[in-house]
Image (cartoon, rainbow, N blue to C red; front, side):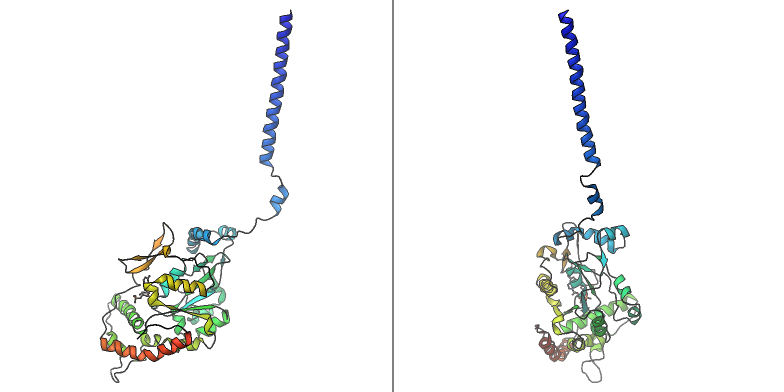
Amino acid sequence: MLFKQQALLRQKLFVLGSLAIGSVLYLVARVGTLDRLQPICPIEGRLIPPEPEKIPLRTLQFKRGLLHELRKGNATKEQIHLHNLVQQLPRAIIIGVRKGGTRALLEMLNLHPAVVKASQEIHFFDNDQNYARGIDWYRGKMPFSFPHQITIEKSPAYFITEEVPERIFKMNSSIKLLIIVREPTTRAVSDYTQVLEGKERKNKTYHKFEKLAIDTNTCEVNTKYKAVRTSIYTKHLERWLKYFPVEQFHIVDGDRLIMDPLQELQLVERFLNLPSRISQYNLYFNATRGFYCLRFNIIFNKCLAGSKGRIHPEVDPSVVTKLQKFFHPFNQKFYQITGRTFNWP
Ligand code: A3P
């Protein structure tokens, strides 16, 4: 009898114990579910917008993948909105000089995480038809960027086109202006080589450089030849100085950008008030190309197109000397105005 009572008590205890454990487990599970379903501050969570994304410079390099897609037009409106991306007017323009190394300069500056380049030459200020389309058209040609980044465009024809300084001044009188120059005779030959290649592509014949650069009647330098005129840097710069103080220009040594790009790029970083971010890692010499190429990261690197770095035709040394003598006084004036001296003959 006693044995039977003990067994009954044990059974009751077991049932009660199981019920107690079950209840505890249920409560734990329920609390866990509630915790997951309801945020601690649901109202605040919904009403306060998230902090605007402040992206440290180093992470922007990583974000370039996204920007690259955006520039190609592969982004949705939602993505642009989500990342607060905007199309900004340029805060700096590479205004020239044609064949000075304008493309190399733009591409190399684009290595900087706070710089975004306009890939195409926009020709807004030098082309009357484009200019008539208005500033919103120009802005619409700019790449998407984060608000704190600076957009840079390059159109080398700006430097030599009469109307451009006034037009740029009207857009932004404190814009920073970059001019990349090369030894004037070399630049003129480079200019000629580009035109010659264009003619050859169309199976057309073209004059020799000597014939264009020297007036056969006077045996003097032919100042009507555009490639010569473009190399008279001081003449063009003087027009710009009617609108902008000299401090707003930075002169880049295009010959040094070929041989030792980092030093030139660091000077430009300083001029643009950017922290120094472009390093030797970003630039490597490619012996096959004979030029420095660009390294964005471990995966992505690139050299400039084959149209940059053409082989120049040989020019009669007496013509070279004549041109160098012709440019000499203009060069002296250019050094004086800009405060930057070059080892040009
Ligand atoms: P050449 O083709 O005469 O060698 P731009 O971009 O203004 O048209 O200038 C072209 C010049 O950029 C080229 O002239 C080339 O010498 C120069 N250049 C400078 N750095 C370069 C680089 N890293 N790769 C290719 N060309 C470069």
